Image (cartoon, helix red, strand yellow):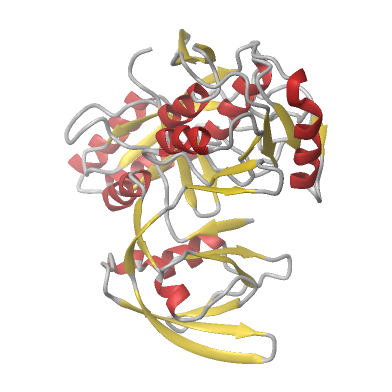
Length: 392
């Protein structure tokens, strides 16, 4: 399980405006979601398991309003209703958390620039350090062990709690505030004090491998990712293959996932979804590159909006999917404001791939299984596609 010191959650359509629909994915670092336009567990194999929430938005809102009238916490009342609903994706978020999530989806967050995961023995290992971040400036590197944050031991804690400590969520710590980390590297143990900073998520990175293959990695679908992918595709050597690396992608803005699909499709269906039985559809924009050989890399951490994109590229015959079965998060959440400004999310529907396949509870199986050496397998696949690849 891994996490980064940012939280990603749904965004509003505007200040004071009605909240848009979202696809939500519970993560160890918070929640990653994707906003849908108002228009238009690591799963076992087998049939998709639909979530039918018992609670409805109006029930949660009523419970919150009654609690506030009685001088009680509306958030706690809403949480009780949600906990009894049977909706595994339902959640309640404070006003502050929601605002932070919106900023993160804009590609910005306050933190020190660490990515981390909890090992099986409970230890917290640094898995990545953002370039130019406070953590990078302090010489922290991947493979180091994080022992403590401001004196709080982190071994055995959920990564969500570690992330919260790094960000200073308990005190709403702004950029510039200090945080002291206890670190370990081999036999060396030390502490270092960093200043939190406003950082960019850097959701899209690209690199060119020998032979001209371009690897485009998408960490999450934050604002602007779709256009960044389009630009990366245009920069790729003419006729060369592309590896779209979606491993560990926890989701994000579905509008950005659709824009990303548009970079490889010439219009057409990306996904369908229902909201309380009302069927809707998402379509790609015309004009994408439909001839360049394409492989999508996925794994058990590929979730939500990333699965929506994977399903579209696979079903439309546009990409060969390599890796392992994706997470299986295919439900739709509707967020609504509570009287105290917090936000409740409840499942209201599910989405399907262009062929009509459900994703929730089953995920998407790759065309070719590959655990270790997945990137090398992707390169082999691309070398075999070449002139044989044709648009859908």
